[in-house]
Length: 210
Image (cartoon, rainbow, N blue to C red):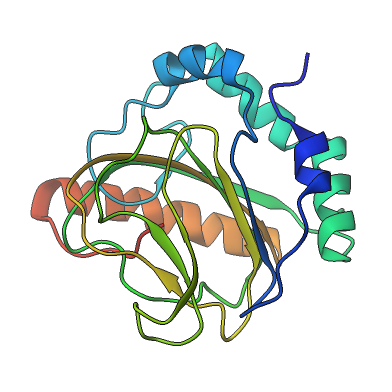
């Protein structure tokens, strides 16, 4: 049985203002959330962490395997009108957020599609809610997404795909999947994130956030 509600994903219209994006609450089916919370990587520091750096369990492994599968690739290709089968995928996970995270950015030009799957309890905080921005002004937003468990946010990267969030400090879990332009970029980013995770753990510092 699939962990993902691809029917709901297919039925959700792609938004075009200010760029191509969509949000799908309940993308991860509710009956799998308890096991995924248990098996989520034990990330104890801020930043995007490559999978395998921290322990993770079998339910999480199963979710990642499904996200890598051809049915998901086809669904996203159809949604964005772009054949993604020739692009490799890259995965990272976030576990903790600092007040300095969430800076406005548009993502690296090597990314094609960014997918975020949030894994947090019902979100009451005003900070930490991702905003889809029309400009580099955090108050000029088209949509705001609370990072609640099972919610998917995805968008097509462009020079104007600005996004960010107000400060939040504490646990804020997010799985990030990207279709990217080449495996060399993946190698570089995995290396950078591993070094960055070590440096943030030792020295602290700032980071972008989702």
